Length: 195
Image 1 (cartoon, rainbow, N blue to C red):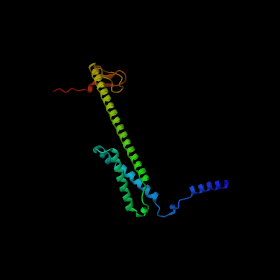
Image 2: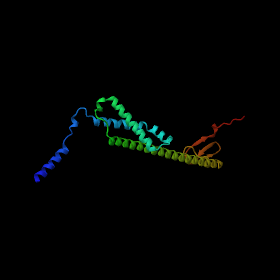
Image 3: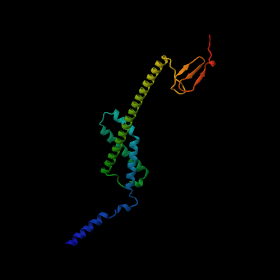
Image 4: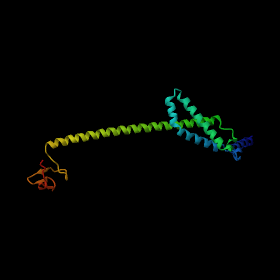
């Protein structure tokens, strides 16, 4: 009895590790066309994303129906393109229903992922614009307040030194000088226009 059990275990191991006979056939390019179809469909979804968004905005149909219809159109178009370009690939009868659904689900996931990332980017751009507007408003207010302060200082007739920006310019008989640094301007070069 134990020999029978060992033989059945060996038989199970051998059948599970046995290589597929179909993989040796030179015309079995199922994985190749499946990969090519998937890549082409993903590319089309990304290219047609804006067109699909406009359909969502202006159609009264269910969103899910529009998406499903659009994805089915893309898959069938790409399937026909591949069929026309390489007839050797089509010795296989086509994808199974489950594989088509997997492809459609993956395309739908990519579409919604792109849609979400686009809305996130738009939200960030809006936040940045709002922040820039607030900064501009703050700076404009600060400049205005500074101008008001400078206007008040001008009424006090205090003139600050343009060199050291700490000393005050004083006017004596023939000389203008700074109280902090060694700036001295001779008033002899000054002239007046009389009209």
